[in-house]
Image 1 (spheres, rainbow, N blue to C red):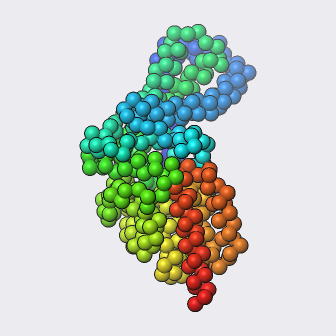
Image 2 (cartoon, rainbow, N blue to C red; image 1 turned 90 degrees about the vertical axis):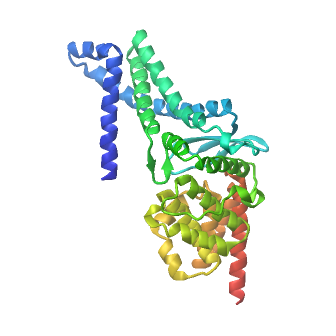
Amino acid sequence: MKGLTGLLIGIAIGLCSMKLIFWMVDGGKPLVESASKGTDYGLLAVSIILAFVWLFVTVMIHLILHEAGHLVMGLLTGYRFLSFRVFKLTLAKTEAGLQWKRYHIAGTGGQCLMELPEDQDVDKAPWFWYNAGGVMMNVLLVLVSIFVLRTTELGIVGFSFFVMLAFVGIVMTLMNGIPMFSGGVGNDAHHILSLWRHPELRLYFVRTLQTAGQLTRGKRLKELPEEWFADKPATKDSPALEIANRVNFMTLLEDQGRLGEALKVGEELMSLGKELPQIYQLEVGGERVMLELLTLNRTEVVDELWTSTVEKYTVMNSNYSPIKCAVLFAYELLFHHDKEKAEAYSEILQLHQDKYAMAGEARTAISLVESAREVDARRQGE
């Protein structure tokens, strides 16, 4: 039902956008004049092919320039560049310079990460323009497209390109300019609205970006100032930024070797049930399994937590998130006692450690793999 609703909404937006574009381009005369001369099936076929080609091309253009909008507005308001991602390909700034990395966040097509200086006064931290930059770029492209369509004589190739560029721009503007929150991922307008309504969340916003910056440079969470990670329990009313901070706090405890405490935080988060956004259910669910295996080792708890959905999500993202490799290593070694399969995940982690966008997270994951080996050796000796 959810997929059908999204499809219908998409079709409705598309039809309205097209009608709006043709109205703006002098009442859509090119189409009207063509229709008055009768149907040209060859022209119709070419138009359909061009529509599909330009759809792909213009989506890529808008996606890249949307993230470029965040980059430009961030740089103009005091941010420093961290990484620029389109789908799963990421260009990240590391200690060794710009490098291509692997990263992915479910529900997103791209991301431009930037950070503020460590001495930034949180109360004065700029948050609006950085978040609004992407939508501003989409709107600019729509206006440029409409201007070209209204002022330039174009053939079918050029006309169809700029119509599609305007159409995709309108759709992306609505998708990012109307506050939406789905599965734990908020769009740009949702971030702006949350930070405007709740000034206290700006601290988490700044710290999240600063943490990402340090992880990109290869720092582990335990090497960062502990005050960056507020020990504030999550509740059903906690906004997404607070939950993200709580998840980081759980991972900090893992990195510090305080696995029992990390387990309790994981239990606290999972106790929220459906009130915990879906992406965090999947993220925390996998790490909760690892923590259970490393500490209390209750078989019935692992069976309950390791659902097919959590397993599929963890396996699919193990190429982009090193912690997922550590989770899979612990699961195969300590639950199934399959050393060969476990070591395969360790090899993936070692092979990709220089390709992960968050190099510091890779170091933490390697440490957790070693912890799992130690736990297994101890239990074998008992």
